[in-house]
Image (cartoon, rainbow, N blue to C red):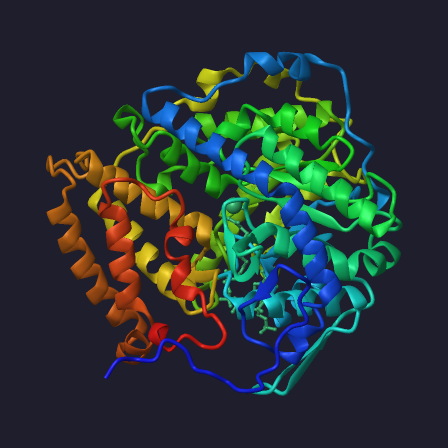
Amino acid sequence: MELETSVYRPNAAVYDSPDGVEVRGRYDQVFAKILTREALGFVAELQREFRGHVRYAMECRREAKRRYNSGAVPGFDPSTKFIRDGEWVCASVPPAVADRRVEITGPVERKMIINALNSGAKVFMADFEDALSPSWENLMKGQVNLKDAVDGTITFHDKARNKVYKLNDQVAKLFVRPRGWHLPEAHILIDGEPAIGCLVDFGLYFFHNYSKFRQTQGSGYGPFFYLPKMEHSREAKIWNSVFERAEKMAGIERGSIRATVLIETLPAVFQMNEILYELRDHSVGLNCGRWDYIFSYVKTFQAHPDRLLPDRVLVGMGQHFMRSYSDLLIRTCHKRGVHAMGGMAAQIPIRDDPKANEMALDLVKKDKLREVRAGHDGTWAAHPGLIPICMDAFSHMGKNPNQIKSMKREDATAITEEDLLQIPRGVRTLDGLRLNTRVGIQYLAAWLTGSGSVPLYNLMEDAATAEISRVQNWQWIRYGVELNGDGLGVRVSKELFGRVVEEEMERIEKEVGKEKFKKGMYKEACKMFTKQCTAAELDDFLTLAVYDHIVAHYPINVSRL
Ligand SMILES: CC(=O)SCCNC(=O)CCNC(=O)[C@H](O)C(C)(C)COP(=O)(O)OP(=O)(O)OC[C@H]1O[C@@H](n2cnc3c(N)ncnc32)[C@H](O)[C@@H]1OP(=O)(O)O
Ligand SMILES: O=CC(=O)O
Ligand SMILES: [Mg+2]
């Protein structure tokens, strides 16, 4: 008997969508308060106005990839030298976010939102991106949670512990990170095609929250955003136009919306001035998204076997190319009058091992001290338990809310293209290949079952860190690299990788236990991860390649279950 492809539900409620918009995600009365006709209409307007620009920007990414794959390397664009040399500055920093010394990040999950807002950090970056698996349920619940947070009414009852969570009187300022330009939102069709994911995230959040946010959080400014994974200033220009369009719709002053751009792709480091210039009325700085940046280094140089990375654990901020990137970012931001934000240390508190915990916290402390001494104005914390250490390190700034005026870093103007591209030093080992494999599979299993950030081996893992594992494995297999740190002359091959996968799966099963292993999606994740690591062509994004597996159209498509 053939499987039905869908379950017909007579009289099932549907969302009230405007012309040309079809919502294919599960109907829920609570989601319907977000997916109103007016809010969907706003998202559709954004999509119709900007889809051509986004399509062109994605084609430019593909064109740049073709050039890099033919041997070119990224560099400063001679045609925009006038922007780099010009004496312009960005709009002044809104007083509400002058002090951003510690920012906590986390997925848009209800309890975590409350914990993050109450954490004592200055800012909470609520994440629809690296830390979130973008299932319909996660995305829509996230929108509901954020609306309740901005309204100040968010609560959560942890039934197992009989604990009620609610907001403190003083909470962190909220920034929201929508997805990157490349991700579609398959549950919403606009004129028959999937919506652009980030315009859904931005559009729904903005529509429902701008007014309240500006009264309660932004002191007349806002809402505030983080913008991920851009590769070129033309992509920042689209965001700037989206912001202007949103401000016009809302009838609020131009320059109200403010955003920090993550510099987390290798091509973007050569475009920092240009990105700030495009967003100069809406900018509140740049951030060192170090994990995606490492991923992007491998991806950009996927066809350059002379630029291989050492083991993932060796690619830290001490590497010359990473230090150069952070220093140049500080220089650029401070010249343009905005924040230069640091990044995320991957360590998280280790509850059951005091000595290991002390060592982890010490690494975080060193990383944060390096950032503040270099001139960063603030940093990221992955966990509330790290906030005191980060605060302590950034007390180095004294009473100043930031170092924009005091740490000009003119010395960093001497940083060259060679500095930014310098090949990182270190060795490659079988342990490195094993760890990449173990982490990649477990992360993907978590992502497929709804969790976009997880603790693995005492580190935070999210989409960005998992990407490093994937592309590094791919590159090592593709070029049959020698594991030169082991001194045995062993080269990585598909056969060796196959054995490693088998052994690491056994290890994962032992570590997580038979029950969890059976119930989780480890086998499926293993298949997908192995396919990606051994593909003839490198997939652009891990999560894009497996996105279809978390799409659940309504009426429920039985063949997918
Ligand atoms: C590369 C990048 O893009 S970095 C930015 C994206 N990544 C992230 O934002 C990761 C954010 N961090 C996290 O998701 C989590 O800290 C993890 C997954 C790494 C660890 O999670 P867990 O193991 O569940 O943490 P743990 O059990 O120690 O949590 C203890 C408490 O802290 C809370 N907590 C942990 N991390 C956070 C956070 N980031 N924000 C708010 N609360 C948090 C938990 O909810 C829990 O609260 P409870 O005691 O009230 O139940
Ligand atoms: O988004 C942050 C990163 O490091 O990637
Ligand atoms: Mg990132």
